[in-house]
Image (cartoon, rainbow, N blue to C red; front, side, top):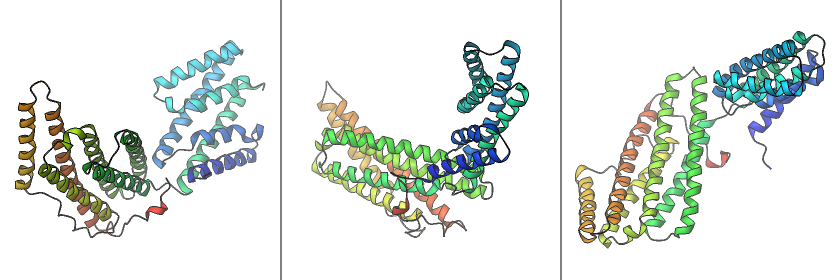
Length: 365
């Protein structure tokens, strides 16, 4: 069992919301405020801020719909269902579909209430939800705000390490096809996780206006970091899909590809170390090929593809596999070169030289 920061903050927000609601004398022990706090705890600061405005608006609309229906048509179970449908339609039209749940709770509580003064009761219920929403926002903002930059780095670093291990194994024919299929499924979940963390980081950066320029530079570096890891995954994927084609290459060609990829992968590993502050910013330039080396590699690939195309009159899948592998390697190299330049520029900026990533054991998986 793991008690994460978000779990702790959710529990704290619920408790504080109920305490505040009870202090101001709301009926029911502040249950509605507690429910509102549960719905309103978000994974990023930017999302918390957006969520705060959206939930206040949605709950107000929910209260107004409840009051309108009860005062004009009365109350029964069927009208309650129709009111819920009407509220959902209104919130969808206003693009507030992400905050529908709590507004429905507000509507139901108001409509099933037995208080004589409907308007006053509705106002109290809506205000009680506001307490929960605001408390959740304050807790998420000031209590252990999430550090998605380090989480994203370690997620990318761990996944990259695994991808490069698999590429090295595949280049030496040390992989099982069925096992690699399962590993690739895991790899895709990691790529999706990176995208989610990057989105959270983007939202957090938008909320923090203090270092807006530096935040934007950091986001550019992280975006390219993810793209470079995705390119490494694409090399792995192509190598897996066309492993029979690769193993039929001449020995000299396989050695050339293996040596080139080994150089690129070593560069990738050291750029990640450079970003974390473990390698000087002006280092790691050894992997960039000159034009002659790049042309030589392309000539070898094209020559092999032409040979396969001439030999295989009825099928061109092998020549396609050769082209796919070549394009994947070249795209990986291009992303690495750009990634290296961005990291060098970012680390050379005053204020970023001393920003290093904590050790891997500090990350929450």
